Amino acid sequence: MSLAEAPSPSPSSSSGSDDFAALLDSELELASGADSAFPGDPSSAFPGTDDEDEDEDPEEPEAEAIEQNGTKRRRVEEQRQDQGTSVRHDKIPTGASKNVQVKACPHPGYFGGLCFRCGKPQDEENVSGVAFGYIHKGLRLGTSEIDRLRGADLKNLLRERKLVLILDLDHTLINSTKLQDISSAEKDLGIQTAASKDDPNRSIFSLDSMQMLTKLRPFVREFLKEASNMFEMYIYTMGDKAYAIEIAKLLDPSNIYFPSKVISNSDCTQRHQKGLDVILGAESVAVILDDTEYVWQKHKENLILMERYHFFASSCRQFGFGFRSLSESMQDERESDGALATVLDVLKRIHASFFDMAVETDLSSRDVRQVIKVVRKEILQGCKIVFSRVFPNNTRPQEQMFWKMAEYLGAICSTDVDSSVTHVVTLDLGTEKARWGVDNKKFLVHPRWIEAANFRWHRQPEEDFPVTAPKEKSREKDNAVAGKKETSKDKENSAAGQKETMKDNEENAAAGQKETMKDKEENAVAGQKETRNDERNVAGQEKDAKENAVATSATGKDAKENAVARSATGPTDS
Image (cartoon, rainbow, N blue to C red; front, side, top):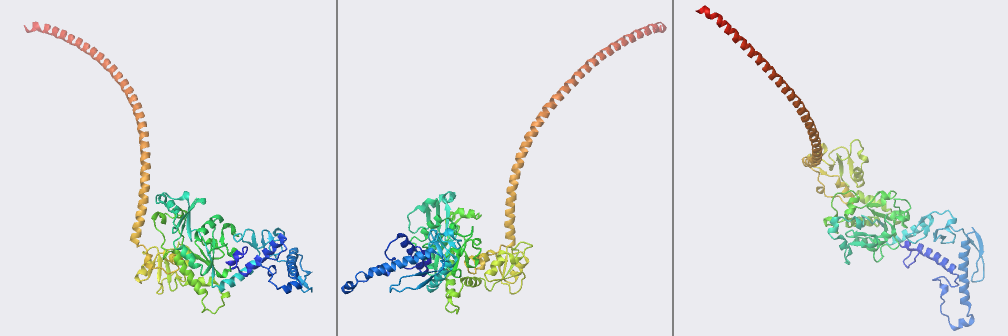
């Protein structure tokens, strides 16, 4: 907005900017102690006069100029004294005098630590208001002055049929990555080489001083060109100021879209939050484009949520996505129907609705937040949705994100089926409500259908968001589970094999030791037994010998007895 350039007045500046410039001029002139008139003061340049006038009073014009300049200097001096209401006597060119009431300085703002109206130091006052360092270093405006400037700016904007557009950078207009975070696949594809080429049509750039690469989102230049005809635009990022300025140079090399309108994290008035309090534009005409909702806690009604742009692999990793990035896939969004082309159509609808001449309401009393709400509710208007197995058990469906989002987009949500239901949103065709939907020829869609409508601001084709059939889903799930189990089983088998090998080694070693000891013991015992057996055998042999000897003796005795018997028997026989 033109008021953002107040410290550097230009012919296009608004009345608020002119006031501020005039005050600064007064301060500078007073500080220099020059006797010349203020820059641009008519008294500093005198029209040519004829000789007759010069003869009558040749020094009169110069005297009048000095007197008028002295009056201006005295006015600034008396305002700087800030002594409440006082009476002073100003010299009037006609020589007459009158009393003039001078009110206490309200301190509308500070520049370089001094009130830019009275010159009083900032540290002497209880200062309220907001710092606008992105406009000019050291500039701080009080609340009443901000309101006054916003009011003046609103009139200028409405007269030019424009609104205010606040644009986020990362994942909205661009995607950046640090050189150290580039993936091996991206290196192989020559990402850095492409960024270094001197091609005026390239969309990827190297920020050498920051060791980063930046990719412009497709259609961004056309988007800015067309949006600038409908909006006064700001950049608002949570990145550092140096980074924000570098990106602004890439997006706006001629400095025609964002002059003194680049806001960074150092300009925020609340940590980790963005706010419209640092915008010199009325909230009633402000539209925000950002991929992150939670940083705009106080201004969600002004927000159009953008689908995130993940070009680099590091961006996917940052948000926990496991799929390949656009750069690794050698793909990109289409310019014709990508995110920026889509949201440009939305902005055109909002702009046209706001300035609709058929509406009888006065322009100054209209509110773009109401227009955004109406346009958003047209997206799923006429749809009645039933959810099936989308939300966790024991939770209120009305408090779930998809339920709220659907209502936000104009749909009617229900927990029960009836003939008026148009869509069954589910993850599984096997549920009772899903089967009812099939039997009654209703649309069965995945929850992503609602999410896509929210980002694209149009009802999406239902056939693009099918629900997986139960068998296929079950098979996929079983395969996934089986794969996990197999992997787990392989790990277990590997671990078991290791354990078994260790156990076998330990058991074999122990068995070997036991066997050795057992062999030794058995051999010793066997040896002892063999010794005993040998002893027994010797004893047996000795016994046998004795017995044989006795037997032999007995045999001899028997022989003797037989001989005697035969002798006795002999004479009898004869």
